[in-house]
Length: 551
Ligand SMILES: Nc1ncnc2c1ncn2[C@@H]1O[C@H](COP(=O)(O)OP(=O)(O)OP(=O)(O)O)[C@@H](O)[C@H]1O
Image (cartoon, rainbow, N blue to C red; front, side):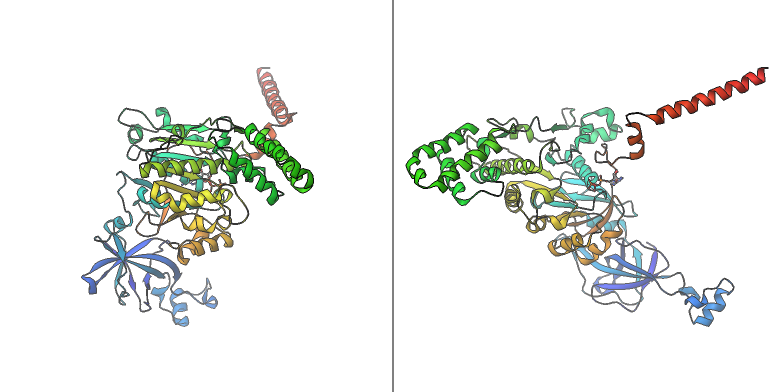
């Protein structure tokens, strides 16, 4: 491999500087051989670059000969156009423990530096491209080297995808899901989709939409079938009231004004609902029974009496008059979760609070079900999901906000902290990491981080994610759309990548030409009329010219 630079004298600690005449992008990799360790190649990453020497401004005149100027300024002309590049030492790969080991000695001055070779870059991946449990996510920037995520790590210890709006989060989620659904993995995926932007994954069901035979083969299962992608919307999603726990019920009817007394009476009524399959009316009837039973006491204690009335009113308003709650569940876990299947819950037609509620019930059911399956228990009222599950939660800050209440926060935290034991992998997606619950974020042991400009969001990432150091955060604002830094347990060392192209169409596109769309939708479309008049004028002119010619 060709030498691209030489270590200069300023080496210290984990970092060294070298001089090169090449521009090397930040985040790219170089290597050098360490003679004290049998010449083993040491992988290092570029973190900064500056020009080595430049002419002082007073010598920057077009009339001045460069050689003369260099002599006058006391600069070696050869140094102009060279770069001083700072690199961070990553280390050599120790196969025995599958990790990069820092050599703890900086390279000596004069050590040749080379572009990292493919054989050294290979160690960045924990898994090979087309093997089981791998997700080919893109290439190391400015190279042809593939980066493959280790899916076992994602399922066991979760992943976060963080980026400012428009930087490519949902595109990247799409790529990850495509990889999950390839035949090599055959995953069971559930997507909580508040903006309804993932339905284009349905392209995977249609051979004619997949570009060629080679692509089709990657998704084709032994029975010749392609993956199943199902979209469920508000008409399909309804909650069975008896799936709610007491806290859910209290949270739904509490608009912030529910007193402790009201909570107390609601709890007593709820405790009387011994059967597992109660309906909306039965909750109200239990409160009415309580009112009858305590009749005399309530007469003497008007405050208690008004508490019961308060509950009845709230039940009427929030539960009995809502189509969203049914006495049955339209969607069972069996329908949602199955290998080689992605179920997209399009929540765009559901209010934010109801989205949280729905997610909390679904997450809890999946958690209970997986727990039972792993522990080998059998409970008749719980559907058994016998395989691991990958759950994508878009707009994660809505479901687990850092501040304020959310009906789904506690259960999501439980899934993140204990899901590891039960094979529930979560992908938490957010454009506002600073608004995301800190514990939830730090439970995601792998990260795909894309362009982030907001300093609050950058700080949050620095403070709550161990594997994302300052050098990574400093690079976030300069990333382009579609560029990402992968870090954490899914790869052996953090790596800058260009996310691969999607196989399916991307569903999260903005409006391409808003002006055109507005004009096309004008009630009195005078643009159309104008265009027709112009066309007519042209034709008239043309004919009159031809008439003239014919004359
Ligand atoms: N890897 C990529 N290759 C090509 N185009 C990409 C890539 N990533 C993103 N884009 C394009 O960039 C645009 C924004 O991407 P995307 O919708 O994924 O952003 P986002 O971060 O999810 O935004 P929002 O938060 O607004 O949903 C899209 O038009 C998409 O097609």
